[in-house]
Length: 67
Image (cartoon, rainbow, N blue to C red; front, side):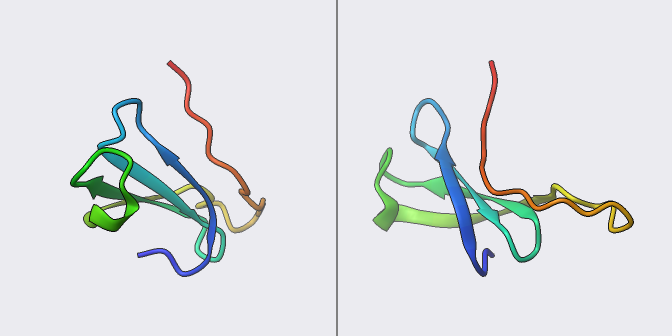
């Protein structure tokens, strides 16, 4: 789960929350029980590292999704 949150983003329905952790450069996925209600989130046990190339590090600071 995220240690230091750099950004958050909901999917279009508000049923999924994505959290960018800028310490681990990882995006974590959460399930939202009631759309857009942060008090109802649970960790979906899904994550992806967005900066796996440690030889050429960059520092992700925001989430953005396309169609």
